[in-house]
Image (cartoon, rainbow, N blue to C red; front, side, top):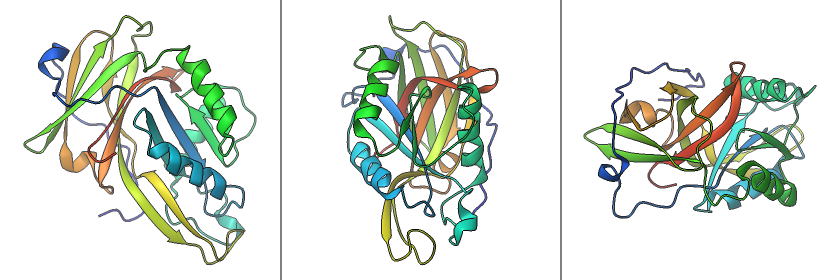
Length: 251
Protein backbone atom coordinates (compact mmCIF):
# COMPACT_ATOMS: atom_id res chain seq x y z
CA UNK A 1 0.00 0.00 0.00
CA UNK A 2 1.20 3.49 -0.80
CA UNK A 3 1.38 5.46 2.43
CA UNK A 4 2.86 8.75 1.27
CA UNK A 5 6.50 7.59 1.22
CA UNK A 6 8.15 6.91 -2.11
CA UNK A 7 11.33 4.89 -2.13
CA UNK A 8 13.87 5.16 -4.91
CA UNK A 9 14.80 1.52 -5.35
CA UNK A 10 18.04 0.25 -6.81
CA UNK A 11 16.76 -2.97 -8.26
CA UNK A 12 18.66 -6.14 -8.89
CA UNK A 13 18.67 -6.71 -12.63
CA UNK A 14 19.11 -9.50 -15.07
CA UNK A 15 21.03 -8.37 -18.14
CA UNK A 16 21.50 -10.47 -21.25
CA UNK A 17 22.04 -9.99 -24.95
CA UNK A 18 18.73 -10.21 -26.76
CA UNK A 19 17.58 -10.06 -30.36
CA UNK A 20 14.60 -7.71 -30.32
CA UNK A 21 12.72 -9.73 -32.93
CA UNK A 22 12.42 -12.61 -30.48
CA UNK A 23 10.81 -10.27 -27.94
CA UNK A 24 8.26 -8.47 -30.05
CA UNK A 25 4.58 -9.25 -29.64
CA UNK A 26 2.24 -9.27 -32.68
CA UNK A 27 0.15 -6.34 -31.40
CA UNK A 28 3.13 -4.19 -30.38
CA UNK A 29 2.33 -0.47 -30.51
CA UNK A 30 4.64 1.94 -32.29
CA UNK A 31 7.25 3.45 -29.96
CA UNK A 32 6.36 6.90 -28.55
CA UNK A 33 7.65 10.12 -30.03
CA UNK A 34 7.81 12.00 -26.75
CA UNK A 35 7.73 11.87 -22.96
CA UNK A 36 6.12 14.87 -21.25
CA UNK A 37 6.48 15.33 -17.47
CA UNK A 38 4.16 17.81 -15.80
CA UNK A 39 5.32 19.25 -12.48
CA UNK A 40 2.10 20.40 -10.87
CA UNK A 41 0.52 21.18 -7.50
CA UNK A 42 -2.96 21.11 -6.03
CA UNK A 43 -2.03 24.38 -4.29
CA UNK A 44 -1.24 26.26 -7.51
CA UNK A 45 -4.09 28.21 -9.13
CA UNK A 46 -2.29 28.20 -12.50
CA UNK A 47 -2.08 24.40 -12.66
CA UNK A 48 -5.61 23.15 -13.47
CA UNK A 49 -5.41 24.05 -17.21
CA UNK A 50 -2.09 22.18 -17.40
CA UNK A 51 -3.61 19.21 -15.59
CA UNK A 52 -6.41 19.14 -18.17
CA UNK A 53 -3.88 19.29 -21.00
CA UNK A 54 -1.97 16.37 -19.52
CA UNK A 55 -5.20 14.35 -19.46
CA UNK A 56 -5.46 15.01 -23.20
CA UNK A 57 -1.84 13.98 -23.80
CA UNK A 58 -2.40 10.82 -21.76
CA UNK A 59 -4.93 9.70 -24.39
CA UNK A 60 -2.41 9.93 -27.24
CA UNK A 61 -0.77 6.62 -28.09
CA UNK A 62 2.46 8.30 -29.24
CA UNK A 63 2.96 10.33 -26.04
CA UNK A 64 4.06 9.14 -22.61
CA UNK A 65 2.39 11.68 -20.31
CA UNK A 66 3.34 11.81 -16.62
CA UNK A 67 2.12 13.93 -13.71
CA UNK A 68 4.63 14.60 -10.91
CA UNK A 69 3.05 16.62 -8.07
CA UNK A 70 5.52 18.74 -6.08
CA UNK A 71 5.31 19.78 -2.44
CA UNK A 72 6.75 23.30 -2.26
CA UNK A 73 3.35 25.04 -2.41
CA UNK A 74 1.96 23.07 0.55
CA UNK A 75 2.45 26.08 2.84
CA UNK A 76 -0.27 28.03 0.97
CA UNK A 77 -3.07 26.36 2.91
CA UNK A 78 -3.55 23.00 1.22
CA UNK A 79 -1.19 20.03 1.43
CA UNK A 80 -1.06 18.28 -1.94
CA UNK A 81 -2.37 14.75 -1.40
CA UNK A 82 -0.25 13.28 -4.23
CA UNK A 83 2.99 15.26 -3.90
CA UNK A 84 6.35 13.95 -2.80
CA UNK A 85 9.75 15.49 -2.21
CA UNK A 86 11.26 13.03 -4.73
CA UNK A 87 9.35 14.78 -7.51
CA UNK A 88 10.45 18.20 -6.26
CA UNK A 89 14.05 16.99 -6.29
CA UNK A 90 13.67 15.67 -9.84
CA UNK A 91 12.36 19.04 -10.99
CA UNK A 92 15.26 20.81 -9.29
CA UNK A 93 17.72 18.41 -10.92
CA UNK A 94 16.28 19.29 -14.32
CA UNK A 95 16.66 22.97 -13.48
CA UNK A 96 20.32 22.49 -12.50
CA UNK A 97 21.04 20.61 -15.72
CA UNK A 98 19.71 23.59 -17.72
CA UNK A 99 21.26 26.21 -15.41
CA UNK A 100 17.80 27.56 -14.60
CA UNK A 101 17.67 29.79 -11.54
CA UNK A 102 14.29 28.62 -10.27
CA UNK A 103 11.54 26.04 -10.59
CA UNK A 104 7.87 26.80 -11.18
CA UNK A 105 4.47 25.24 -11.69
CA UNK A 106 2.98 24.26 -13.99
CA UNK A 107 6.13 23.17 -15.80
CA UNK A 108 6.32 20.60 -18.58
CA UNK A 109 9.65 18.92 -19.27
CA UNK A 110 9.72 17.45 -22.77
CA UNK A 111 11.91 14.42 -23.49
CA UNK A 112 14.04 15.26 -20.46
CA UNK A 113 15.44 18.34 -22.14
CA UNK A 114 13.13 21.26 -22.96
CA UNK A 115 11.11 23.27 -20.46
CA UNK A 116 7.68 24.67 -21.30
CA UNK A 117 4.81 26.31 -19.47
CA UNK A 118 2.63 23.33 -18.65
CA UNK A 119 -0.55 24.77 -20.13
CA UNK A 120 0.99 26.10 -23.37
CA UNK A 121 0.22 23.46 -26.00
CA UNK A 122 1.98 25.32 -28.82
CA UNK A 123 5.16 25.69 -26.78
CA UNK A 124 5.07 22.03 -25.79
CA UNK A 125 4.56 20.85 -29.38
CA UNK A 126 7.49 23.00 -30.49
CA UNK A 127 9.63 21.46 -27.75
CA UNK A 128 8.68 17.99 -28.97
CA UNK A 129 9.77 18.89 -32.50
CA UNK A 130 13.08 20.34 -31.28
CA UNK A 131 13.97 17.39 -29.06
CA UNK A 132 13.01 14.70 -31.58
CA UNK A 133 14.71 16.52 -34.48
CA UNK A 134 11.84 15.56 -36.74
CA UNK A 135 11.91 11.82 -35.93
CA UNK A 136 8.59 10.01 -35.60
CA UNK A 137 9.75 8.08 -32.53
CA UNK A 138 12.36 8.24 -29.78
CA UNK A 139 15.81 7.00 -30.91
CA UNK A 140 16.00 3.77 -28.84
CA UNK A 141 13.36 1.03 -28.83
CA UNK A 142 12.06 -0.09 -25.44
CA UNK A 143 9.76 -3.13 -25.44
CA UNK A 144 7.90 -4.56 -22.44
CA UNK A 145 6.56 -8.02 -21.75
CA UNK A 146 4.80 -9.37 -18.63
CA UNK A 147 5.02 -13.04 -17.73
CA UNK A 148 4.88 -15.03 -14.49
CA UNK A 149 4.91 -11.96 -12.25
CA UNK A 150 7.89 -10.37 -13.98
CA UNK A 151 8.26 -7.36 -16.26
CA UNK A 152 10.90 -7.94 -18.94
CA UNK A 153 12.40 -4.84 -20.53
CA UNK A 154 14.13 -5.18 -23.90
CA UNK A 155 16.26 -2.34 -25.25
CA UNK A 156 17.50 -2.12 -28.81
CA UNK A 157 19.47 0.52 -30.67
CA UNK A 158 18.09 1.96 -33.91
CA UNK A 159 19.89 3.71 -36.78
CA UNK A 160 19.01 7.01 -35.04
CA UNK A 161 20.83 6.08 -31.83
CA UNK A 162 23.81 8.34 -31.15
CA UNK A 163 23.98 8.41 -27.35
CA UNK A 164 24.72 5.02 -25.75
CA UNK A 165 24.97 5.74 -22.05
CA UNK A 166 21.76 5.90 -20.07
CA UNK A 167 19.85 4.68 -17.02
CA UNK A 168 16.72 2.55 -17.00
CA UNK A 169 13.92 3.70 -14.69
CA UNK A 170 10.56 2.15 -13.93
CA UNK A 171 7.83 4.44 -12.59
CA UNK A 172 4.64 3.10 -10.97
CA UNK A 173 1.68 5.13 -12.21
CA UNK A 174 -1.92 5.75 -11.16
CA UNK A 175 -3.86 6.09 -14.40
CA UNK A 176 -6.41 8.50 -12.91
CA UNK A 177 -6.98 10.18 -9.56
CA UNK A 178 -9.73 12.69 -8.77
CA UNK A 179 -9.13 15.02 -5.83
CA UNK A 180 -11.59 17.48 -4.20
CA UNK A 181 -9.57 20.44 -2.94
CA UNK A 182 -10.92 22.01 0.23
CA UNK A 183 -8.50 24.85 0.91
CA UNK A 184 -5.87 27.01 -0.72
CA UNK A 185 -5.82 28.68 -4.14
CA UNK A 186 -7.95 25.94 -5.74
CA UNK A 187 -10.51 25.73 -2.92
CA UNK A 188 -13.80 24.23 -4.08
CA UNK A 189 -12.38 22.64 -7.23
CA UNK A 190 -12.34 18.94 -8.01
CA UNK A 191 -9.45 18.05 -10.29
CA UNK A 192 -8.71 14.83 -12.13
CA UNK A 193 -5.04 13.96 -12.58
CA UNK A 194 -3.81 11.54 -15.24
CA UNK A 195 -0.86 9.16 -15.00
CA UNK A 196 0.23 10.21 -11.53
CA UNK A 197 3.73 8.93 -10.79
CA UNK A 198 4.02 7.03 -7.50
CA UNK A 199 7.71 6.17 -7.46
CA UNK A 200 11.07 6.60 -9.17
CA UNK A 201 12.82 3.23 -9.34
CA UNK A 202 16.26 2.92 -10.91
CA UNK A 203 16.67 -0.46 -12.61
CA UNK A 204 20.20 -0.23 -13.97
CA UNK A 205 22.50 1.13 -16.67
CA UNK A 206 22.58 0.73 -20.44
CA UNK A 207 25.74 1.12 -22.50
CA UNK A 208 24.41 0.50 -25.99
CA UNK A 209 23.51 -2.57 -27.99
CA UNK A 210 20.75 -5.02 -27.18
CA UNK A 211 19.91 -5.65 -23.54
CA UNK A 212 17.25 -7.17 -21.33
CA UNK A 213 16.31 -6.30 -17.76
CA UNK A 214 13.79 -7.95 -15.43
CA UNK A 215 11.78 -6.38 -12.60
CA UNK A 216 9.18 -7.97 -10.28
CA UNK A 217 5.70 -6.93 -11.41
CA UNK A 218 4.56 -6.01 -7.89
CA UNK A 219 7.48 -3.59 -7.57
CA UNK A 220 6.81 -2.12 -11.02
CA UNK A 221 3.24 -1.28 -9.99
CA UNK A 222 3.83 -0.46 -6.30
CA UNK A 223 1.41 2.29 -5.29
CA UNK A 224 -0.10 2.46 -8.78
CA UNK A 225 -2.07 0.33 -11.20
CA UNK A 226 0.42 0.27 -14.09
CA UNK A 227 3.87 1.64 -14.91
CA UNK A 228 6.13 3.43 -17.38
CA UNK A 229 9.73 2.62 -18.31
CA UNK A 230 12.17 5.40 -19.23
CA UNK A 231 15.62 5.11 -20.77
CA UNK A 232 17.23 8.41 -19.80
CA UNK A 233 20.68 9.83 -20.38
CA UNK A 234 22.49 11.58 -17.57
CA UNK A 235 24.16 14.97 -17.47
CA UNK A 236 26.69 15.24 -14.61
CA UNK A 237 24.55 12.79 -12.58
CA UNK A 238 21.42 14.82 -13.38
CA UNK A 239 18.53 13.69 -15.60
CA UNK A 240 19.22 14.26 -19.29
CA UNK A 241 17.69 13.49 -22.67
CA UNK A 242 15.16 10.66 -22.73
CA UNK A 243 16.27 8.15 -25.37
CA UNK A 244 13.41 5.68 -25.15
CA UNK A 245 10.22 4.89 -23.26
CA UNK A 246 7.40 2.38 -23.03
CA UNK A 247 3.98 2.25 -21.40
CA UNK A 248 2.71 -0.56 -19.22
CA UNK A 249 -0.68 -2.23 -19.80
CA UNK A 250 -3.67 0.09 -19.83
CA UNK A 251 -1.83 3.29 -20.74
